[in-house]
Image (cartoon, rainbow, N blue to C red; front, side, top):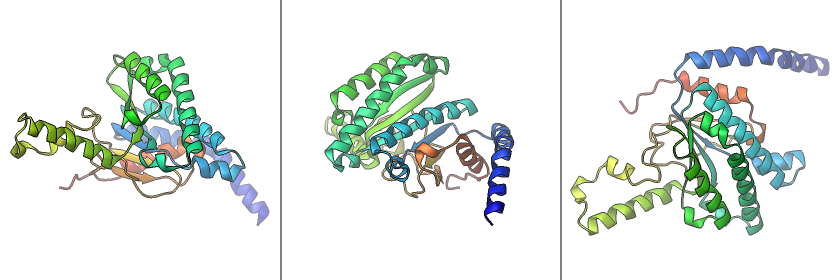
Length: 263
């Protein structure tokens, strides 16, 4: 049995480049999701499995996220939203929260140093969430990135930091309530579009596909308003382990579904 397993794994390994090439070709021939959102999960569990510090796990997850962005842009996705830190994550131990923001700041500075990649691909960067909750250093770098890339093009890279779907809806309701109080808006005129226009990124189309790594199967308070008709895909691998072939499988699965939008 051990020899058979070894032979199977070797055959799988040797055949993987051919399968990946076939899969990529098939994906490019099908409908490409315009907006893909990712719930980035599994960094700490990956680190524990490998005997690494969880800080190293986050660093490896952040590095793989860069790869995911390149792969998504390469197949034609126009908008990418990354769920990096939720409002609930602030409840974690202080040293963990501080370490996560340290890694985030490092990666934002690295991205700033390679800003030509975003320019060449026509990608504008922005942060969505309760920015006032972010450390000042992270908020400053993010603001600089938003300003530097604002004219790069119509594609977007959206980083959800200090973000929660319920918090976003609450904040939208507050904005609408203020307009009603100031007689700028008639309550009878409030509809779905009114709410959309008061979300953090009102110009961003709803995600066609939401991918979550690590095997967990829930949205975890991510894009609750926008995900009403999104296709969901749950990937078994932890974020640092995710391969291009895993991403291609997610998109291929999306292409095989029939989207009815409630009709």
